[in-house]
Length: 631
Image (cartoon, rainbow, N blue to C red):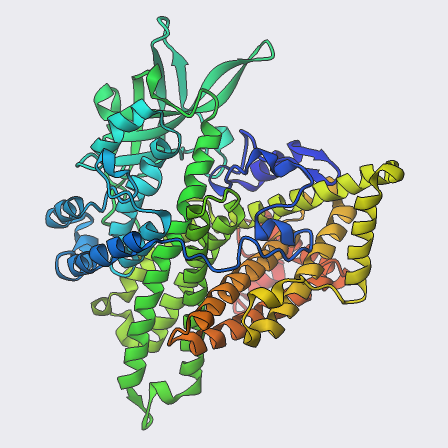
């Protein structure tokens, strides 16, 4: 999304000084996910991340770490994982896929035979009927071997036909799901030249035919994964609808078949990475779509798109945790065998620290992935912020881990033979698609601020009639007094967390209180103008990421201790190190509104404006004396 569109969206939808309205049909697009309707009230949220913006450390969503698979589901995984791993080791050739810019036919047909294109489709419709956690485990296998193939699989089922799974009528599901599990590719068609993260600017348009039996679709989409090979597509277009006696445009989702006619594709795009996945423009010219193929209701396309993206983000974290795991293994094996200056690389403390940090990032990524998938499998609805955070964290971490693995391997890592340079190229897109990390950070911050603002608004109303609201006023007063003297602590932290981890957990809880106080200060200082303070928003999002990632590993490592896992001591060390570092970063939030911080932000903004005005770097090389004199 372009910055001006984002800011304009947020400003238009500010309801009151302390309340940001939830996204409806304009803006945020690939960045956001639609939250439950009840989110807007000043209530307690089921989401851990939402509550920390009020300074509350709520444990219900996080503890205990989910264990949602029954014996039959565990057995299913035990039967699926070995053949999947064997297939990727013996049949799939990632280097050849990359060089040829397409997936080999034997690989593609083998994946269909394995059922890899219908992992979550119900068994009655031809799929494997896997839960979210089972799906995550298999995508981790794919991520460990070939991200290009992973994109082809994910574009097909994680977003391509996911809308049919989530919003399809029984008739739509019965008609299309057997097809997408038996050889017909699916694609998700949202992005246009003028609408990346900003779905409100979609130009594709569908109008009802005179006989009322079809929608006539015209428009185009760009950068569509599987766009050149998909037969079944989820397409988003503006449709005119009547509202309050006026005709307005709202986005509608449609199930479109290439066989309808009028659907064509451009040539495959040439890309930096994930070269074997098909990416192409798709054009729609007078495509006749039966009205029965409206997905999720006319004018409800934004909600459909956001729920599809939100529902699929956890899979990205699981996939990239597999990628990181393999890179760490390569780096560790090299460090253990490579000798320099009479010592193994593994004996240098700088290499040990690199590997430690890589291991921490992989552990956190994996912990969040399965925490979210378990939350979804348990039937909980509020995980949109956690899912967004997992995507941001996983894609940033995977880039760092693979880059460091190349560094440890040195010149060998730079060679194509190790495969790491291909993985690094493949990874770059993950920080961009399905919501750029920049937009997702703003989404996390603004959604959390909205939730905190609704609570302040409720307090404002309560003080207008204090007699009728004594309970709320006194409970809030007690909470504030407690945290003011540093006594605040979530009462059930000790109950849920292993004894070894309680000191770092208590410190984290204090940092969460600080976050809530800073959010309130930001709202009081900036009001509606907070949407323009994107540097502050990024800092708040960073704190939310630190807190959410920390509780994920606290929960998982506690589970390891209580189950007596052989890795428990190692997991405890990772958790202590990560939570301590995250808490230290969060502690600096108290300076967020300090004059020196604001001056620094202003200085950076001015530098950026100068660069834009000048069309690039202003300063000249020191040897260009004539240019220097001119300046």
